Amino acid sequence: MTSPTRSTQSLTQEDIYAKSQELAPSAPGVIPFIDEEIQNLEVESAKYQSGEQDTAQFTPFRLKQGVYGQRQADVQMIRVKIPGGILTAEGLEVLGTITERYAPLQKGHLTTRENVQIHHIPLPDCPAVLRLLGEAGLSTREACGNTVRNVVSSPTAGVCADEVFDPSPYLAAYVRFGVRHPITQNFPRKFKTAFTGCESHDTVAAAIQDLTFVSQVRQVDGQEQRGFKIYVGGGTSIMPRLAKHLYEFVAEEDYLRLSLAIWTVFNDAQMLRKNRMMARIKVLIDKIGLDAFRELVDAELEKIGPIDPKPLMQADEILRETPPSLDPLSLPHLELGSPATQASGNGESGATNGHEGGDEYNRWRETNVVAQKQDGYYLAYVKLTRGDITHTQFMALGDIVRRFTGGRARTTQEQNLALRWIPEEGVHAVWMALKAIGLAEPDVHTITDVVSCPGTDTCKLGITSSMGLASAIRDELNSWNGLLEDEGVRDIRIKISGCPNGCGLHHIANIGFHGAAVKGPDGEQIPAYELFLGGNYGDNRVEDSRIGTRIPRVKIPAKAVPTVLREITGYYKENHQEQESFNQFLDRVGLETMTEVAVQAQKTAQAAEAGSDLYFDWERTNIYKLERGEGECAV
Image 1 (spheres, one colour):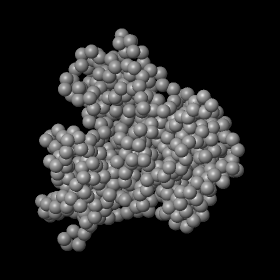
Image 2: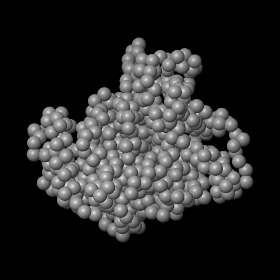
Image 3: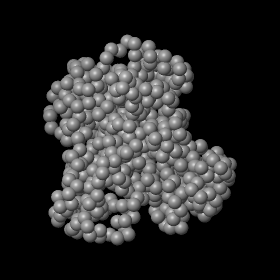
Image 4: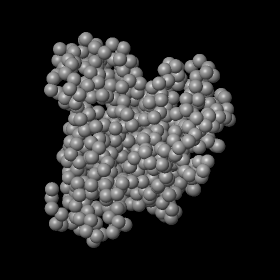
């Protein structure tokens, strides 16, 4: 480790940005690694730990390096930015090394922003972790703080049959243009961006982003011109908003100019700096209106000269995928001694024609595997419990990605992984490799694929154990054989947040929950959840996305949530029409009806759970007490 003998604070932000731009075209990852930043972290950390620097000075600096405070004292969460969700085999393996060497729980956590978070890292170890990440083309730069956060994209980018064009190179250029840019270092609040190539179905939660680019193509003088439809001002938390349509078409040569113009308007909005809790771009648009916002952006565009994205789009080291041959004789087999078999001690052959597994394999193939637009190739989703991956699974996944796919995996906003470019004859071998490491669970993107933020496991802002509830719901659902036979019930999406901020994306779930606290019969606090119904994204256009409706009069004790959920889904199963989705059913019967179902279920569940158990949160052994710290997002 480099000795913290000197600080690089003397470098201006302009100097650092210039170096970042120079390194970008040849960088092994989307975000160039600059060791001087890590040296600086060592210096500033030493000052902080010696008492030479106070928390108010150190925290904003630490956040820009992607090092975030936890609920637990003296340890940090490291948030690894995964632009576009793209992970190489080397990236997966270095995450395995880091989680084994530095993380006490020896696991990482995939987030709804396609990041990977590693928890409980002592501050003195953070520079070493960041260097290991940098060597593998990964970065934590500006993963936290009031900056441009990780930029998300669809796991099917480049392989979806409905895609207008693959936006991945444009995403890479946007990330490189924005990271370390002087104007993006101290926004009024964080800024979230998405790119999608598909207009017909939104797989990036485009409607709740600050800025979304949707691929478009126009014919101009007989020539095809690429560009983007632009949406702005989406967001969740206590003031959820759906993004608004700002421009119908922005040509590819202008999209970075537009980005800079929008960033400038946001950065210059002094009204937002008066209250950091109300400082998102959606608030600015609420206050001045979309037309006035567009006028401000247009005025900035007049001041900005041409910005050529092509040099920053050179990202072959990270974007390039090498599809395996379609020749069955050339496909690899699952061999003894590979990381996948070592992880479980399973040495079964990975022969592609035997189809060992029977119904188990067929179920996984039916629910987790989809055809790519490229003939003969398939994408397989890896369903992760609570978004967690152990260090041995990281290592094995690196081996699987290298041997059986195009060399890249994609993280998803559903906290899963996507493996791409699998030849049809290799799908079974991939299943066997995943089964060997405990990652061959079927039914991805169904009611059992519950999304959850970390909640009180690690987050200072957490009110409840959202991850504990997610596990409880999964366990309960897996015992509902009769209910899960109904296709409509299976298609319901459940998302959980441990507080109203919405990191678990509960606002856009068909059934969403966020953490709360209520008083019990004797006045003591009980962990509870508020209920949201009717949210939606993914199966429709951006314009058709919906924010769920919070159900009044319902605060469900945490231990009663599975019972209430069963009553709601059971009522839907017994009363929905043929081919009627859950949201369509809500529209037909009305929220008043479902509110009454929820209220009665809550009363029944509370009576059944009466006693001391209500005072314990899921996966907790101590009586519940609301303990909420100060978050660092707005620092």
